[in-house]
Image 1: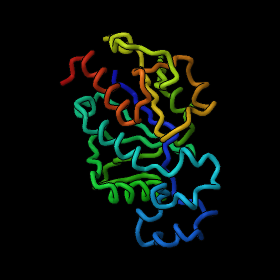
Image 2: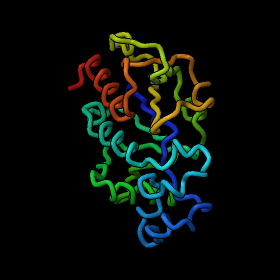
Image 3: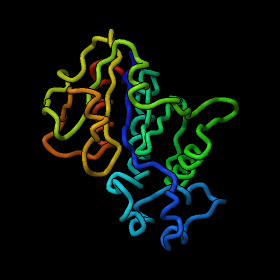
Length: 224
């Protein structure tokens, strides 16, 4: 079975109404340009200071790098990856493995803003990104006979990747990785599984974890 990868609590959202009148937001935002409507810590840091849970918000760059790593992998190109992102606002999106993700960051931001506003991305009648009509627990329960792995620097350190993945494909294996800058998983995420593991002695950026996890899975299943 394909690896199911869910990037959770991603800092991906439209600029909240309560800060739209802030000078740093008004300077860049226009309804005519999708990318300017996406919350971005690099542009809106001063406006975000009073937002709840601000440390996890406004980081579309993390999502961008993670998606480029995942979608460009042999695992995805061989149709052995199911990829989802879950946002800090509890929206869930599924990515068509054939999507060609924009490498330019501003174009990516525009695409993500359009996705959040419209709910999906289509091209020539093909669904490239679709919204899952439910919460994270419902998504996970939609996969029968599943096993969940939470990847966290606070988890039990596993040095041998063969102890993480095996050649057994009888179960739906769900890998959950945090798509945020700092802090840890929320209680909602931690309640999903007691199987929390770490793959390094050092804290790693989300896109590095995505790359390593996919590489481990490819090696085990001889996907090159």
